[in-house]
Each structure stands twice: as structure tokens, then as C-alpha cells.
Length: 496
View 1 (cartoon, rainbow, N blue to C red):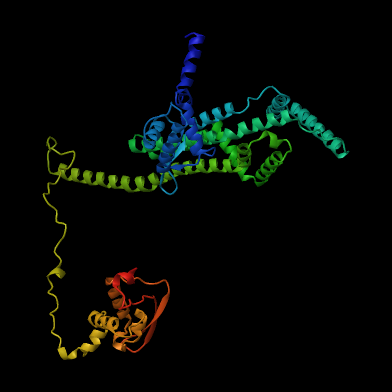
View 2 (view 1 turned 120 degrees about the horizontal axis):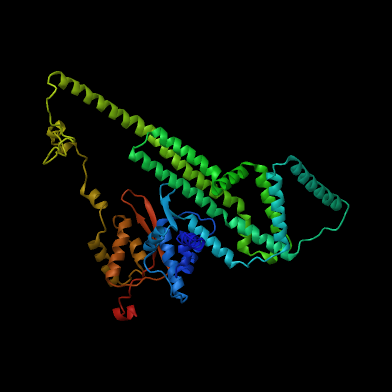
């Protein structure tokens, strides 16, 4: 294969990666926009039903803006399509609920778009100084010559000592230029934005290892101890031999050192409070830099949770599978061996016996759902006839006193009042003139019922009804005042 053909094969392999397949499609701007709006920069897990609804809402808003290249289908269909494209992954959270997260490929695509959306960094003094400083520090840590390392450290100490003495003596503090600060913030944001995809790659590696371990356990073509040893060696190589693993170990060491975390927070605060920072950083950039420590903690938590799932898989297999099932299989094989020895003791060497590999199924037409219960055949206790004389004596008057309104008596009293020479002015005045037996609280409802049948209208003012209970106690009720019609005026004029 020629050199150009080999380069073409490598380029084709790069374009086959999910990161470039996401960016290479016609609807990539819409998909990237939805991912950025839904997951943000922290890639927090989103419940499946909520993401389905968010995708449909975002697509509706994009269609209203006039965009024509919009994916078709429901939110659930699109999420499943994106899972097949290796841009989304569905898993279970700590509470056992299904959630979506972005894969490292999708986060890498979002990071690339975000970097392209920023102002492109150009050649500057800050970039050259960063390269020189990185090369110098790298050489001081990797140079095998002891004398060279000491020379480099002495030169750095002398430079820092001279700068310190100059500032102590009151020399002018050289302020950083706006271009220098802009270049520094751009590089810092680029480094911070790459952290989520790095953590996601480590998390996905552990997920792949977990799936392979489960497949090896189910296949049972290797001993369990060999599978566990293989996992331990792969986990160790993942942390030490890969770029993502080393980044994870470095971040984990950073968070375990409280002094380094405090120093990182103080340095970020000082940079954000720089006078030039207001004109360079947007609110989103400030929030991204201010949440760097939290971003690292969230990524570490997700990686540790995925590693804990792998450990839990091993524990479940060792505790339940090996101890329970293998012991049961061993006992079964021993029983088969004992029965075989018994059979061989009574037969010849050329005896043949047909043995079914699997036991035959038992044919049962119907299984009883309930079985005989002697308690169902116990007769109930006989009903004894009560003596009528044992019951309490109740008078008719007492029963009527506890009943409803006496509509017949109330109607007679109401009609008598309307035809009398001195009729009552309202229902309240009429009620107050009744004897105690007709002034029970329930009789108030009876009078209101009769008034409603006659379509009399009440006033806004209220009047007091003094009711008397059958036991002689008194109760006061406030009822809207309902005047009685004048018997000398026609009914139509009264209503008017």
C-alpha cells in the first residue's frame, strides 16, 4: 500500500468515528443545538421521559424559527436513533431510574463546535511563552541528567528570586495586556471544556469492561478467578496506560489534596476579578471557569459510580453464582456418579441404557388455586331472638323531635300569617313567634324551602333566628333576611 493510500485509510477511519458522523450529517447544527440546550456543559443525566419531551419542544421552536433541516419523528424515536449513532447512552441512576447521558463522542463534537464558535486564537506572545514554559518544565521533569536538572532548577529559582526582589523593592508592576489575557482565557476555557469528554471516555471504558465481564461469566469458558484477574489487570492498565486514565488519576489526586483545591479556587477567583476580565469573558465563560472544581467532582463521581458497578458485578458473581450454583452442580454430579456406580454393580460391561438428556415435562391440565380449608365448613353461630322488652323505650314525640322539618305545620303557619291582619315582616319574625316545638334548627330549612317554592328573593342584610333544640338548648343562626310579601298588593308587584 502506498503512503497516500495508507493516509486515505486513516482518514476514512477517522470519518467513521461517531464524532465526525455527527458533525458530517445535514442536520448536525440542529442536533448539536438540542444537545447543548438539554445537557449543558456538565452533561448531567436526564430522565428518559423528560428528554423525550424536551426534544419535541426544542424541535417545535426550531421549526417556528424557519429552519428546514429538522429531524423527523417523536422525541423517543430521535433519542433511540441517536443511541444507535453512539451519541446518547441510556443507563440506570442510583435510584434505579432510566436516564440519558451524552457519550464521549457527542461531547467531543460539542467541544469542537464550541471552540470554533469562539474567536480563533492567533499567534501571540502568550502562546509562545506557554510553549516555552511547557517545554522547560517538561525537560526539568524528564531530563535524565542530574546536572542538567539542577541547572534548570537553579536558573528558575534565580529568575523567580530576582522578580520577587524587584517587586519588594517597589518596582513597577507590569500589567498584562488585553491580548495576553484574551489568549490566556481562551486556552484555559479550551482545557476546561475538554474535561467532560475525558471523564466520559473513562466511564465508557469501564462500561465496556463490565459488559465483557458479564459475557465472560455467562459463557463460562474460563474460570472465575481468571476473569477477575483479567479485570484487575485491565483496570490497572486503564488508569496507567491510557491518556484518559492518567487524567482521571491526576484529577483524583487533585481533589484529595485540599491545599491544591483551595489554591485552584483562589487562582480562578483572582483571574475572574482581574480588571480586564470583564471585557473578555461572557457570563457563560465566567460560570464555566467558576464551576471548574464542581465539574471535576461530577466527572469523578460518574466514573467512580461506573467502576462501582463493575465491582458490584464481580461481587454478585462471587457471592451468589459461585457459592450457590456451583455447589449445587457439584452435588448433582456426585449423585449421578453414585447412581452410576450402583447401576454398574448389577449389570454387565456391555449393558445399554437409554438416558434422556433432559427430563420430560409434566402435563398438568389444571392446577388447583385453592385447597380445602376446614374453617370454611364451620356453621355460623345461631341467631338469638332478642326480647322486645330489653330495648329502650322510645316515644313517638321523641322520634318526631329528631326528624326533619314539619312542612305541613310550617305551611299552615306561613299561610295564616300572610292572611292575618298583622302579618310578620320577615321569616325571622315569623320564626320567633312559633312555639318551641316548631323552632328547631331544622325548621329554618323548612321555612327557606317553602320560600324558595314561592320564588321569594332575599335581601343582602341578615337576621337572627333563635332556634331551640329538643333538649332545650338554644342556638343562634344568621340567615339572609327574607321579607314576607304584603297581602294587600298583587304578587306581580311584590316581585317587581
